[in-house]
Amino acid sequence: MSRKLLAKTLVGAVAATLFALSTPAQSTYAPAPENLKARQDFQDDKFGMFIHWGVYSVLGNGEWVLHNRKLQLHDYERLPNFFDPEKFDAQAWVALAKAAGMKYITITSRHHDGFAMFDSKISDWNIVARTPYKKDPLKMLADEAHRQGIKLFFYYSQLDWHNPDYYPRGRTALDDGPWHNGRPDHGDWNAYLDTYMNGQLTELLTNYGPIGGIWFDGMWDKPDADWHLDKTYALIHKLQPAALIIPNHHQAPKPGEDVQTFERDLPGRNTAGFNTTFVTDQLPLESCNTLNGSWGFDIGDDKYKSVEEIEELLVRAAGNNSNLLLNIGPQPNGEIQDEFASRLRAVGEWLGKYGVSIYGTRGGPIAPSDWGVTTQKGDTVYLHVLNWHAPLLALPPFPRKILAARELIHGTKLQVAQSNDGVVLPLLPAEKGQTDRVLVLTLAK
Ligand code: FHN
Image (cartoon, rainbow, N blue to C red; front, side, top):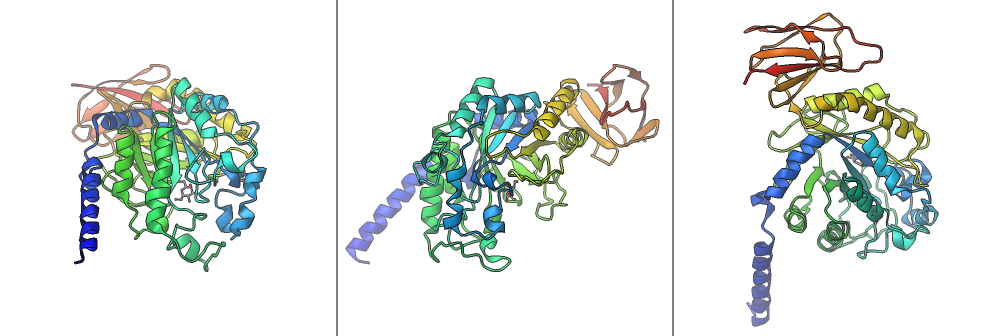
């Protein structure tokens, strides 16, 4: 080995050791006490608002429009010129989430088009540099979230259809025939991850006060690539130890991750076709879904879920020991359309009465089933009857003696028959429009 090469190797080895000392590998990740507390709080919170909002919203055709229409970047790059959300009102967005009974907001800091919806110095492909709006809505939202006491998480797409260094390309550029959107056929993958992505994550974790965490999406585009997760996860946990890493990679959790999330499915189901059926019992769980059929604003999508469907989604998530992250796609002018807002407010009113059986609970002792689910807080089990039309409900054996049972809303006492074979409960008939009949069971110590 030449002296020059030896010197270089030594410098490299020292640098690697220093890095390893300052940012421990996440394969040996031991969550900080504040991270463990944040996980508990996250589980208690149960209900979050997901927001997909970007320059794609201008076209009213969802957040995948760049890819779906196989657009060229030089055309897509005209979009920021038309993005001027003069009606964006951070105070109103946060107030709506709170009125819906949501305890956190997860917003796209950038989606697969790579466009940063925040003031990034890493690249000028961002809202402040490229749009007539020139302001940073995430900063306004973060300040407002802190003021109104709601947590803010940043969605961050690891997949990037804009940056040339996202190379080699992933399946979204290769499937259904190759899509050349004008980028060169070469790029520096390491620079993309270590400089660009980690640079932007550093901005998000330093310029917006304490944040709830980072919600990653897009690794599924290159499932076999080396994503330098150790480095990225260590960076996040170093900058904000309480921040939760929530990766939507559709796989079993990897070291360094703090929450397992599922898309358009409850934990363990795979009706969507891309979720893993593995469910960890080590981490909090989350399931995300759309209020209509789309993530980003889609002007033709009127498949709005009814208030009752949303309530049922939330209850079934809770019974599966999971949070529900419910998505809306605001309009390009910054307004949240009334079809979303009115439904969210109605769910919030319902939670005003039923929230005690959801917030702060964990999945209950009886496995979720078609009839409904159970949630539990301490010695109290909440039986959520969602789909049962007979006057008696028979359940498998309970692990503990039931001391008392009552109906949640009116407090009506109920007689329980409990034996080693199971439990039988009488049900009051469902009232008109009542999604969930909740029975409150008090268990012996
Ligand atoms: O491709 C995205 C999609 O646009 C959206 O962001 C959802 C939200 O969970 N996740 C991806 C697909 O897994």
